[in-house]
Image 1 (cartoon, protein in one colour):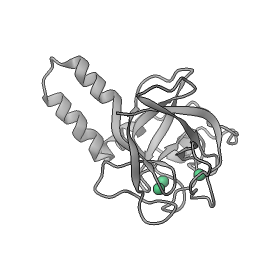
Image 2: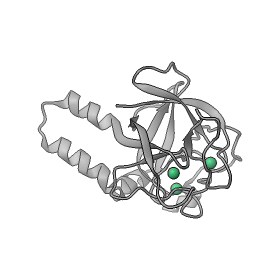
Image 3: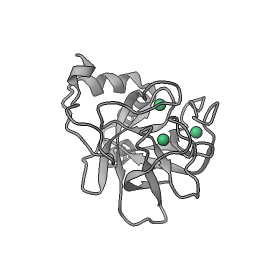
Image 4: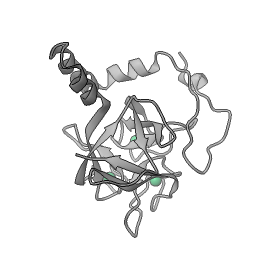
Length: 202
Ligand SMILES: [Zn+2]
Ligand SMILES: [Zn+2]
Ligand SMILES: [Zn+2]
């Protein structure tokens, strides 16, 4: 199918991230296959047997190895042998918590879907607009894999961290808890809009 005409782009981006209805049968299945890591994890769970269904369902509901980058303040996936592309130069540099991000569960008033992995920079970005922001590897971000569902505007606990925000300039997710706002691929520091995301960590 034609991805461009298949996307819902009747309105302009709003100041904050807002979900939009999309009907793209087939697209997600293709992209999930393209992200090898996702299929490896599912295969291991399936071959483990049909009895421990609850544990398997729990394991499938989150993906770990999402980390804070000390250079750009963005959230990126550290599960590969390289660390993607950082807007501050070279690859991302991880520190702090190992975030364990929910995916492919229903959206709720305090959880937003349409957050995706970018195959070019390895960052987390919002896929709910008609364009895909700005990628540090050039042009727009490129989505693949899971549909992440990020909790927002709920109390922080010992197992979660708040102050993760959407950048309306690059569409990336970054940590807003410092005096400065890191480095944006659209130039200078990230901007801030929308929900206060509260990310679970291990
Ligand atoms: Zn970075
Ligand atoms: Zn990107
Ligand atoms: Zn940005």
